[in-house]
Length: 395
Ligand code: FEO
Picture 1: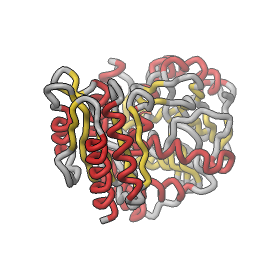
Picture 2 (picture 1 turned 180 degrees about the horizontal axis):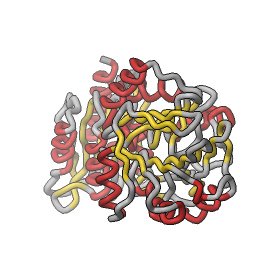
Picture 3 (picture 1 turned 30 degrees about the horizontal axis):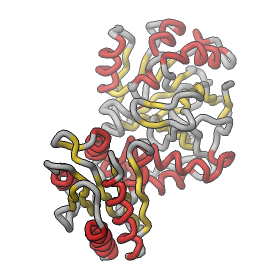
C-alpha cells in the first residue's frame, strides 16, 4: 500500500494486513488495515503508527513523502499495539527526543508497554497544538475503548482522526466511503457489535458532546478500514442507532451447539414456532459460525435463545465460550430463553437461564430440557416455546 494523499499535504501512510483472519478472537474475513496519518506543515506530524510486524512498511511509506527524520511531532491517539507497535522503531528513526503527544493515561500505558523515557507531552481534552498553518485539538474519549483513547481534530481541514472509533476490519484497495459505497456498512456494524457495544452509553454521551461543541467534519479518519469523506454523518448516525439498542426489528437468534443432533432438532422446532409468529429467526450453530459473526446478528435481535446439550454436568464448551463473550459485550433490551437435550443429569438449560438472567435479559420462560432424542410431543413443546418467545417479541 502506497501513501495516499487524503487531503492537501495530509497522507495516510498506513498499511493493509490482507491475511489476518483472527484479530484476538474476532474473525477478520477481509483482513484489516492499520491507518496512520502524516501531516506536512511547519511541524511535520505523525498520528499513530501500525502493528509492529509492519514497521518497515510504515517507515517506507513515510519515506516516500518525507525523510522520517524530519518528523517533528508524534501523536498517539491510542496505545493498543495495533497502533503503537511500531512506535519504538519510529522514535528510534526520527529521534528519541521528539515530542510525543498522548493522553495522560496514554503516557502511563506507553511507558508500561515500551519502558522508554520518551519526551511525553500529555494533553487534555480541548488542548490545542499549533503545527504551523494548522491547529490540532485533542478530545479525550476515555474508555472508547481503552482508558487512554483520544481523538485528534484538525480544525482548518475539519478532519477528525478518530482512532478505533468508526473503523472497520477491512483491507481493500478502496480508501474512501464513496469508492466502496454501502458494501462497507456490514463491516462497520460487525466492528461495532464486537468492539464497542459495551460502551454504547458512552458513545451516546460523546455524540452529544461533539454536537454541543459544534464540530463539523469534512472527513472522519479511523485507524482501521476506509475513511469517511462523502458522508461522515452516515457513520455517526449508524453509531447512534446501534448504541440505542432499541431492537425494533422482530428478530430472534438461536445460538446453539449439539452433540447427537437432539439439541439441533429442538432448535429447528423452536424456529418453526417463532416463524409461525412472523419472527425473522436465524439459527446459528456455534461450531459453524464464528462468535463474532453471531454477535453481529445478536446486536439488533430482540430475542436470543441459547441451546446446549449437557456435557459432564455442565455446558458444551462452545456455548460457555459464547456466553462469556456475549456477557462481556453487555447487550441491552433483550428477551432470552434456554433449551437443551440431556442424557442423565440435565443441567444445561438451567445454567444458560442463570447466565442470561445475569445479563438482565427478560426471561418469559424457565427454559426447556428434553431427555435424549426428542419425540413428537417434545418437539411440540419446543415449537410452543418458540411461539411464546415470538409473542413476547410481538409485545
Ligand atoms: Fe485498533 Fe484498540 O486498537
